[in-house]
Length: 246
Image (tube, rainbow, N blue to C red; front, top):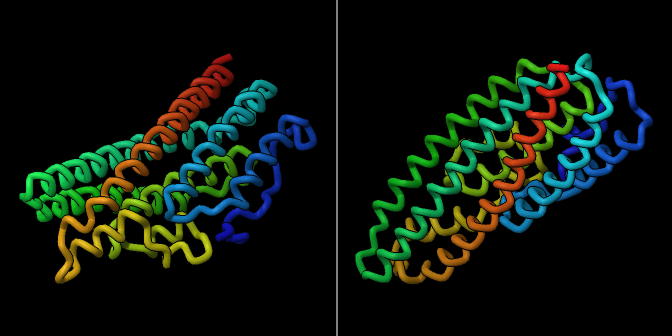
């Protein structure tokens, strides 16, 4: 599933080093992410998180060639990405804990499905608030610089994680506007499949035990990848502040 050309089309570069090799390195990493699958499968998301880490390593080199005149516009974006990334980390942590608790209850034969579904509702509430905040922010920005392209692409990957852990009836119109990928709204993630199974009549809760184990591993992988990206975002903001303060 390729990303929509409408969203990830090549933008004009307003920074002064358009043909610089470091600019080309950033563009190459962006192209890798544009051509990837911003879908709701954990393997695609994990791959994109690894690509993001590579992208920010190129961005660090790119920033070293610039003074503060061109970077003011992306400073607010850097803190926004950190806030979103922190929220996504919390969501993944809550989801993993809920999955582990449900697995434990199944082993005890107590099958605390209601507790799991209640936790899912809390997670969904956090996701909806995050998406609503992002939707309001997105309407205020018109910057088309290379670093804004990096910000938009990073945000799309982060939103894809929210889509992965959202409920089947999550407000997909909000997700699709922030992560407009062809067919993304029709994808059903591994997490969503468990929700659907638990709500189905006649299914034994123990039948979702293996899928739960798989989802727990998926969430763990996403947490590791996201933590690496979070550290990159912190380093990126520190670099921006250092350049702007000198």
